[in-house]
Length: 353
Image: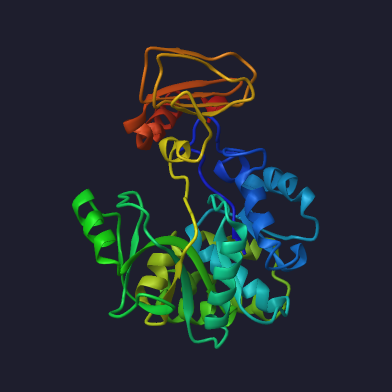
């Protein structure tokens, strides 16, 4: 199961409301969604893969799936965060009579070693196959990152599949350093493997904010019964927009984690993306036309056009160019790009949103 959505704010101007981050070729020639689907081919054929997206993104999603024919597509009537999306996909898997476990994978992550990823998912699937556990793929922290949530493993959890003692929100720098030094914390990568019936049971038991509105509909879906689109939309609108982490995982006693030993990034901002782009004269660059760089260092240059870009005597900048917009931003302000989107909305610039 692949979650493909987003608001298109953190990677403006490359991502927009109708073409958010998963549908943009940020790192290479393929989109992040395309990369995700290619990785999953090592685990299952397209006919056993489901993409959950939004009705508003139907055009972009169908276009992305042309090279992955047979992939099942679920389009949410309205966005209600990941708890509703994952529960619906789990019910759909049961309704399609898919036996075994399912994996939940965001479509906008960067994982360069697909084989190592597939090995970790296979190990997690074995652990979740008993139907008792929800197994998260946690990532061995490579540095004390403050942009990620962390998983605190139970005592003795240094290897294998270990119970998660608690979830920790994005820490400050000092706490993040302690977490990495401790060795008992993992980055929460938002990837989970479980049997679909376990996902539904935990949602029913722990998340009335989701189940009270959507549960009767999901039960019909899980039984293989047809649910009219209008009925699904009515149920969806009543759902509280909660993340699966908050609605289920943080409330469950059945959550375990596998220590993922592969490179991973959620590419949360332009500066985070820069670490995965080729180096050119001490700058990070993704552009069909190499920029002209004179006494320029530690900049991120990303272009979706063949227009020339020249940097002179500057450092620590983000320079992002598309056909209709140019963003110049200090590297340390990358997390604030959404403020530009907010200002565009205030000015009524729908053409740039």
